[in-house]
Image (tube, rainbow, N blue to C red; front, side):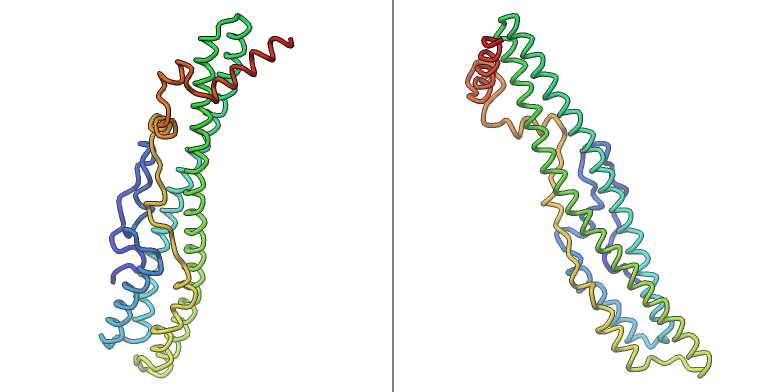
Length: 250
């Protein structure tokens, strides 16, 4: 029985290498809706054509859904791990902003504008890193929320199918029959979809984590470090002017 939402469970993601958790994608650019549509319908059709008893059919569906649930939980854990890692980077970069601004102020008090500019450039690059990390964190947070919905929907459907299977098993034992009646066929063909088709997840392409060094390069592509140090960054020069004025006023 092929798992519904995750046809080929990927290997455990290596988040510590600053790479996106590969388990997040789990199906290329297909959302949950697409995977459910293509995989569940094929599985249900096979079960109905095979002539198995209703309780057996529902048992197979439960096995598949529980596999999907475990995979969704694993993916959710990977995403949360990445969010926590990004939070740590944001805290570190935020501290860097204040640290370099403070050093710039000290340099200006010594009337060393070259050194002050150097620290302000570092401060602005740390600030740009924080902004980039914030955007990245939002992408992962959105994905975590989608996975939350998928997990809750799967849990609810598993509970529902478990109860239904127990009732079917009791009826089959009582009547000593193992046929698939029209009610169960309708459930497998239609009712089982309720709520699941509304789920969707963003494709992996919407989540673009990169290493901290590359983040700084990416957000500062418009001006090279050399240009900024040479006084070509108007924002840095404005900050330098503000510090100069602050010192003048005492």
